[in-house]
Image (tube, rainbow, N blue to C red; front, side, top):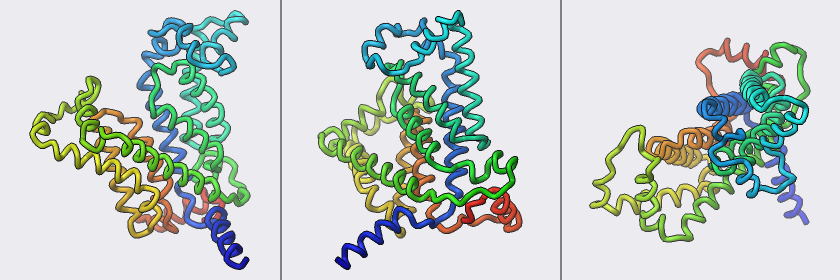
Length: 319
């Protein structure tokens, strides 16, 4: 009975003990808001080709691949058209709304409500155009979901600057622990899935990835020499599997946490440079830094006076 009580106490402390610092709240909010905004601006010129009635793949075809109850952007357009509002007007309004919500998140002006509305709009866009989406879009949805749950406006935000009264103390640790467990599970099963097949173990997947027609187009690295040194491909493949599968172990150990974070971030930097998946790599690096870089009691700053002013003005939860 005593052992069960001790175990329960440890689990309770793990999820609910308010420790660490709240700086990750501002970092996560600003970095995700900026990334989502830049990602949207990168495709805004081709918005009509993806999401309008003139899309490359007709909306009637794409609607076959999602359930009828799902809210999609094409349904939103049809809804407003029933009131006599033109499709071009709806698309323009969606663009403006998307950008404004991203800005609200970045500056911390009712960011939780903004994240909720942006999540609805983002899901409506990607679910109705499933042929044009990939991993970064799903991680964007999950990031916005965590922004809804986390009290990110309580740290370094315009809202705190406008309303200077002290906010109620909020324990963010349950959500942060859930976030940390989430990323740990994601990496483990990503590595486990690679381990099940032979393609990653013999380096074939690495060779195919670096020679994809849409990859390695920005820097044009010459990988032809690897054909004579296949052991390098095997080492890279196994390294990827090991880094991902052992992530839930070593990233939680204080002595190995920094090393495993650097290995994981290096892996994503390689993906960005070689496969040109910049936004996916950025969002995964943000997730790593958000969850485990700010585990220390405080992140040192070079200007103590400035730090004191920042904490006094924007850190009402007293951490």
